[in-house]
Length: 312
Image (tube, rainbow, N blue to C red; front, side, top):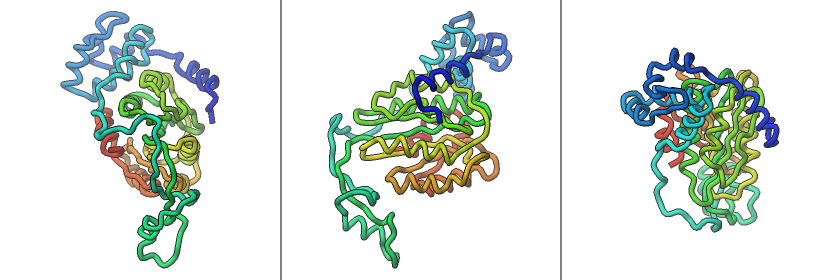
């Protein structure tokens, strides 16, 4: 696992050193010359027009421009990606920043048992189990969310665009008291953004653009790392949002790690990136074990709505 900030920065510096030339971008994106007519230029009106006609093509182009060799074009695309109007604000009145309240959670480590909630959880089952036990404790208000991005193989095209839009959607949802972490994984795990209440969209997006990833898929390690991040928080709500095809290629069975998140009071939601047979079922099984839900994310433009459907 790569978690030390200096080591993460060095890894991203090495992986982000390669960039696409204007000729390469023009060959792979039909609208490139309209959106960037000259070196260093990004025509936001032309991009908005493309987004109105084909939002997925616009998302792919922004993702590609964020890895351009041209430094001014690259910076402009990344700045734009971080502030895209990808989501609507969360509803309801936020708690005062830094406030705390007593909450009931499925947490056998708490000191005060909530008898009503515990009995309701047991229902008609004949035997007690640890997950029946609900306790009450003081929690900081707000939500902690860990975004876990599958970076096995290569992170590009639709996968990169979906990851960037999802990260932007999450970062823009942050309210006072909320915390966000971003973890990428393949055969190893990289903590791109440790859990913090000060996560800035532009920093999160910048690190995703520099990431190249590669290798096999260790889902078990990724979910355990997400749990380690959430162990640092005292927020009232804790979520893990996994972007993956749900298919481990070099990993123990990830279902126990998903279930461990639920036992710790978190919910695991899964955005299924693949339409391949078995992928949706694998993602649904992980989400069920983690006490959350799954949704399809086969096109980048689906990301904002998918985030809202799982977290609202």
